[in-house]
Length: 311
Ligand code: NCD
Image (cartoon, rainbow, N blue to C red; front, side):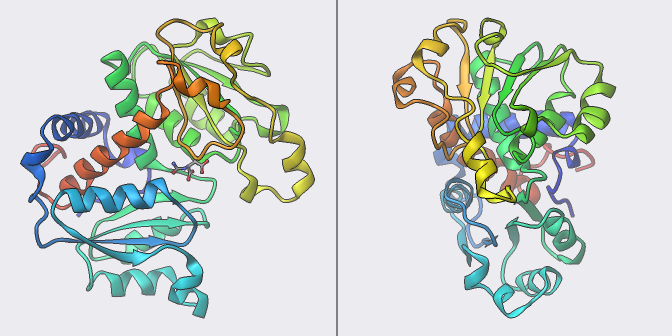
């Protein structure tokens, strides 16, 4: 049985085949409308979410399956002190596959060890968010036809932003990728990501403090929200929250075929005026999240032969 806890749980080839399946579903959704008839997805969300939880639910429903679950720790037995290990052992009898979001780093990994059904990490603390990464990669691929060769600027909260950590881990496996990290000093990309992932990859990278200075170089601008809930004090958040705001004026320094991505939710970091620009891809990106999750559910349930190695 396979789980998806870390983006590297899938090989690059498996990831590429999964993205191809997502594109295939996007092109012909009706052919998959009953692929999961009789199957149940459990969404175990200990931390708030709109897109991720609803897109998992939408994905399972569009496959003909059903969903059950909870959307906050307070409304589950976690409030009574139940461990993740016990919860997943029990859920294994109620559902065929589970998606878990948790405020604690590593919780979905623990769940997978005790689970009898495939577990998907839907975001663990400031750590990883592999299904957002699949969504981001689908968007890049649909936009440029391929992932290799991309120069990507990651902007905002690179310290606490789990989507950034997962995306970097995945992108280093592609050829000719260049990274530009745009953040305030306090929100720099963690040194473990630089030392263990970026530097060993040999890909070019640099860190800058303003988006304007690198805008003309970028193929992809990946904007992120400052992660308020992971700050230790409110003053630091208030001081840093508006470090970067993408306006039409700044966007116009970029290439004509630049694509602006954001995992959403957006707070202030992209001005509403940018939404009308054809380079704003974030709502289309969110839509794509349903199709990658459909592909992922099918794959982990063993209903998409050929995606995983050794199948
Ligand atoms: C992201 C997350 O939860 O990490 N949201 C999402 O899943 N689309 C990004 C964020 O919350 O800023």
